[in-house]
Structure formats: C-alpha cells, structure tokens
Image 1 (spheres, rainbow, N blue to C red):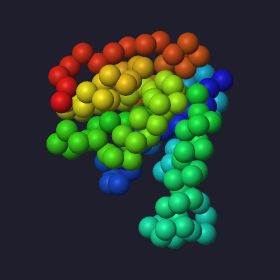
Image 2: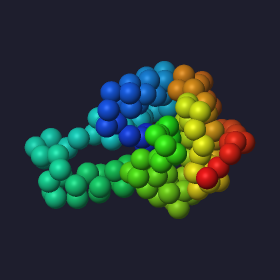
Image 3: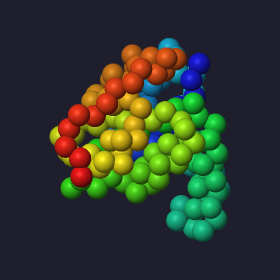
Image 4: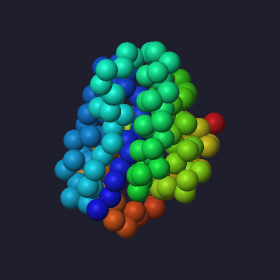
Length: 146
C-alpha cells in the first residue's frame, strides 16, 4: 500500500474544490493506503499565521513528505506561477528521490523545473483513482515550458 502526500494550494474556492476532487480520487484508489493533505492537517490549538503555527506546520509537512512513498502535486496556477509552497514541496520530494505525480488540469505552460522533476504527468484528477501507485508508471509532460 502507498502513503501519499498531497501538495497543492487551497487559498480560494476553486483551489479547495480541486484539492477535494483529488482527495476523493485518491480515497477511491485501492492502492493508496493513506493520504496526508495539509489542507486537513491543521494543528489544533494553534492560531494560523503565528510564528508557532508556522514552525509546527512546516515541521509537520516536512515529516509527512519524508514518510510518504509518493507526492501528488497540483500545479494549476495563474499566470504561469506555481504556488511557492507547492513548488517547495515538489522540490523537497525530488531531493529525497520520492516520485512526484503532477496533476495539471488547466491549459497553462509548466515551469521547466516542474516538468523535468516529475515522475508521472496526469491531466485529470479522476485519473488518480485508477493510477497504479504500486508500480508507479512513468509519463511525461510534452508541452511548452518556461
């Protein structure tokens, strides 16, 4: 079974809707044992935005990336700029030699660092329900990069 870290922004209604669709798709995948979604991983008793919250959230997310078998990352963004937190999570996972599965639903250009660092490229959230996280088949992005 596979432990997944789900990276992606959740700052507005559209982003939250997308993350929720991915959470649902991953929950439906029989090869996924556990999904850590930072959106759902708030630490009780801490006030969002405080230094204590920031430190503990950072440490928790780093720990969860380290424990994950694979990182699934949403890279749909505005004006070709990926969320900086998501970019950090992707880069950290790549450094740890964790496979990174990129979900890219919008018709935007990928940053070359994301395009070159991914293990698998997926165009629809629903495809993650059937993706074989046991064998992790590779697929690549073949579009323009910036």
